[in-house]
Amino acid sequence: MNPKHWSADKLRQEIRNGKWTGQTSGVASGYVQANMVMLPKENAFEFLLFCNRNPKPCPVLDVLEPGRFSPNIAKGADVRTDLPKYSIYRNGVLESEVHDVSEMFGEDTVTFLLGCSFSFEKALMAAHVPVRNIEEGKNVSMYVTNRDCQGAGDFSSKLVVSMRPMTPGQAVRAVQITTRYHVTHGAPVHMGSPEQIGIFDLSKPDFGDPVTIREGEIPVFWACGVTSTLAALSIKSPLAITHSPGHMFVSDLLDEEMAIF
Amino acid sequence: MNPKHWSADKLRQEIRNGKWTGQTSGVASGYVQANMVMLPKENAFEFLLFCNRNPKPCPVLDVLEPGRFSPNIAKGADVRTDLPKYSIYRNGVLESEVHDVSEMFGEDTVTFLLGCSFSFEKALMAAHVPVRNIEEGKNVSMYVTNRDCQGAGDFSSKLVVSMRPMTPGQAVRAVQITTRYHVTHGAPVHMGSPEQIGIFDLSKPDFGDPVTIREGEIPVFWACGVTSTLAALSIKSPLAITHSPGHMFVSDLLDEEMAIF
Image (cartoon, one colour):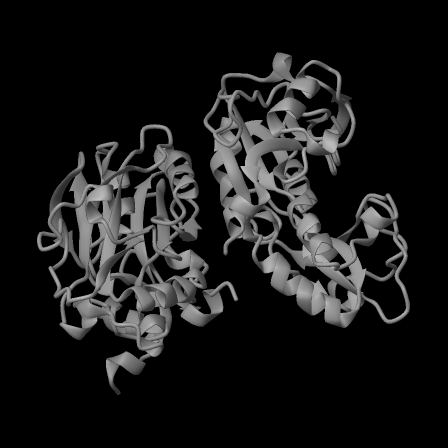
């Protein structure tokens, strides 16, 4: 069967058995995928507070109590083994990427699962609104803006955005469509005038790839889950674990089930 | 000036100066009012998790770091003095009601402000959908259902709902209208058939007053902020402080500003 049509459960099994180690974009289509952050219990309240104060970049899908590895949003899943790739950060610096974090997952590890834009990209395409990064087979362009997120305790971050170019008319439709997906970043945070949010060269994204912007198109910006990674690293914790870019946790939730109306 | 037209700031000043000690329904109209819970720092992560897992009854508007008393959502406010009445619970049991909690507010007190249904009642009336409790000058009818909220750590509660009777056609409109107010309980959780959610006599609410249900009307149920009080008390903390029923915290947020679209 085409991996696009796998169930979330099937995909997680393939990942756990080491048979799927790649990105998850477009796989098990229709299931909500999630950014993942693991932090020590002592930082959990303030990080959850950061997410609550910045719900557009950091929409909370699930949080697991200390030491728990079975999420509520995915039956039989294990967050220690069910992501295709993890990034390990020591004191805020990337140390390595691994496929299993069971060894370093402890009694006091708290796991956060946060919504990701894959949910609304499918809905945009269904309405013939272009998603240029998918059309061109690239990672979406992401930029660190000049806007501060609201801090919480010691956690802070600039807002990171993803960008998709489209015509102004398509942008109106995109606002309507993505408003429905409020737990997966929701409506755009900005459109046009990239310099207003501190972006001076769209062809040089901070993360991901540049995409073609056609005549008559404007850049439309959505809050991006990478913000949660930057925030998690901002306290330079001795150990922080996140998904590796594009290698998300795939839940049993359906995109349509999470839409607000 | 009619208190209905006061700014939130003016109302908070009157409360702080002991000049306004009554309920806040209909006062400073248009400003978002909030349920309030104060708990010790050691319980803060799990209570915030409870709210995140049950966003319809417990929509988070603001959470203050331990010892902080100035909320982000109300300039110059002080949560220790700016609610007209507080309920003090010791080991889960109501001990007293007071107008100022400065004496018992400590370095490790964490304050939670959660959305309340006053926001959407105004929007319903603006669309000529009846709000019977307001028509009859009563408190809204509230019931403890047979539905369990999703627990978090040691926190648990049955879902509490508020009920407003209306025709099926008005109920459709009410779903549309309240969907906009997702941070103040959002769309209904149930309609008709009260016995399906464990309510066997609508004339005997667990909290608030019974209201008239007219021929051809069905009961429409919304998740209710009282759920957060029951959850806060479920751990029988040595000290828990909440707003007293109907005596809410009034923020600077506008109802319309918080609507999702």
